Length: 453
Image 1 (tube, helix red, strand yellow):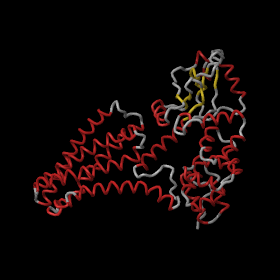
Image 2: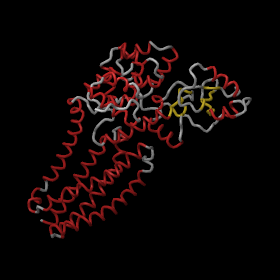
Image 3: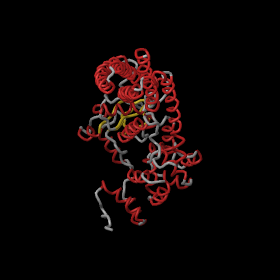
Image 4: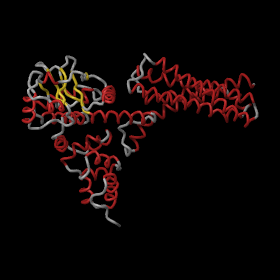
């Protein structure tokens, strides 16, 4: 077998590593594994079944373990942490930035968390405790407390000399310095480009920018992501209720939020979690999915009960049993389209109680046009198939009614669920399916009972 190249193109490195792992060459696999970025190592670990994952984790360079843990999804990270003792976890967390440490500490056992906190110097411990005081999905949970602040009255020359003396250099993703008052309250930002190109004798107050609005620490993560997207920000300052600067959020943290939100919406429609391990144990996966299967079963029985009410009608007109799925399916597709649009609107902060009426009006108009169009198509097919104009008219009416009902539900459900604290991405699809099935069968079979018997 031909040996893979030592320095393959980046796009092929992970595939080549998998090949080497399968060949059993531990030394070569270890060398290739540790040449990858921590995010790529995490990708490899998540692509392996648990037994192989445990072996590969032992190959990871100890100095990179902390960063690799940060890139793993929740389930895989928990699995690996359970296999590490307190000493190994402490070693892995050493040297991590405070914001990264805050993300990791929340998944550690309480005893290990206490040891991690006691191993930090006073300044880092205070910063970490501040970050841990905010929910993970808030601006305070996203922020990095490591910031560089300057006062407005000093000159740019003084700022430059201060920066040159900093032993640790500038934090990553730094595009500006935060200007604060003597009390630490936010005033504005000093962009590095302005610092380097302005007269060194100018004061910070003369050059600073005032139009960068700080983000409250309790702001939701998705609102933070929306602001970064709209304003093309690289960093943004975070403040407490009194206006004091707590830290800053960087674009790389926001990218994580956007990806997690996208994963959540995609997997939520199937009742799955974005942190779920693809290779999780059978019983664990079965237990998680059983809940939504059970809810779906109850809604299916509700639809079956509606069908049972018209058993005599179906027995006399067999064509109804053939055409019933068409009515439910057309309503389901129409409702899902509007539901997805509404969930996205809520996630982006574009949809609220203030503008829902306009969205409902627009979506109902779209539903009316599409409902009539496809009702006509289905009615024509039904008439050609069964040669019965009454059935054709009934199914056309039922499809139109179901599409309108499904669209109305798809528009309103996400907002109603969100108001009651229920995740629309998880619950919206199940409820919508119930509505489209019940309304579809009830309208179709009800009309058939009235006009065919």
